[in-house]
Image (cartoon, rainbow, N blue to C red):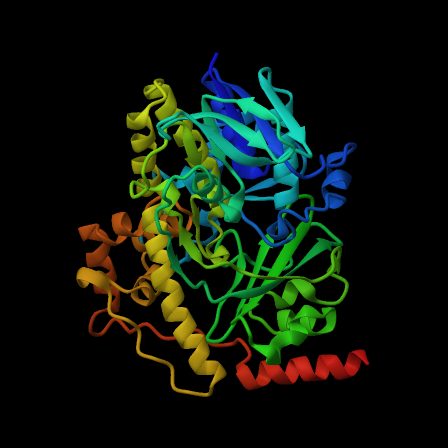
Length: 485
């Protein structure tokens, strides 16, 4: 039986252990943190402190891609999440009532998301994986380096930070944004390919709440979320498991004038003033169940060690965030990590010989999966950062960047989706990670319908209104600070 070592026991590492176990690997997951709490799942998730995973305490969602992966690859995990209070969100409920093509269509069954907190989903996954025959999860153990063959072309073992040698045919780097395989390769004398990087321009705060009654206080305008991305900040709500929901507010990094968002009073004042969130925070509707968690997002990253640009080392594979990171506003990280883990197992099953050809096949698969989302995130973030910066500085908003190759702009697509069911479905499939931007925007019928909706006499895309402007937002924060004194 081939042996795999997975460095890192978060979502990507656990999903990879599950996937590799399914194709006959003996798997050891080496996780430097302590094990999660035992006991009832809800209480254990609430008490799980994750100093090594700072993003775990923030708003997350599982897009349609992630739901599809669990349905097809890990149905027991999905069932356990449902038993823990996670619920499936039918995105077609957000299809505009007067839109064309409004009747149910084949493929609509895929347009779902999962309302669940990350800690709950991860704990369900953890408990499923640790029970698998042939899988061992070791806590308090971290990989410090690799042992390669004399030519430096194949993995033979890992060496822990305590000096233990653990033989392995395959080593999976699931260390998240750190991507420690870069360090392991440098120590081993292997040149490391350069990363592709671009700023996400995002500093965020999240708070979790519990509804006092049944039912939704307000609509989910995006099917799986409420709120939006406005002209100088973002405010988004995601429903969770068991009557919970989270609200995330985001601004530009270094925007000191909005520092009061990190305090409960300032956070609440702005969230209540944000369209789509107001009803959820009305008096008596919900109670906060967490402090305000703050985090600055990392840049968008496509790691060189995961791509075809890396000098291949057979048996070494970064997965999830160790391969690619995109702006968390898009909510696709968990879903892509799940998909990547099972795609890796597919390649290893089709090419069981651990050699350079196998490594190159995985690198091609990784680029095919992540590159479209990295490029979309980079382009979107550049435009948003410029727009937000202009608003913060009191300048005129910059013109929208032209679309590539005559494709419709995102603003045009969003406008058309308000009236056209075909466009709405294409946009939703893209936002839910089921179809890449190129696949959606490159479809001739889709493009024609967007042009029809935005052509002469049909109206033009207009910016969203209703969220507090910059001056009003700062006034809200000032009033909240004074009231809290």
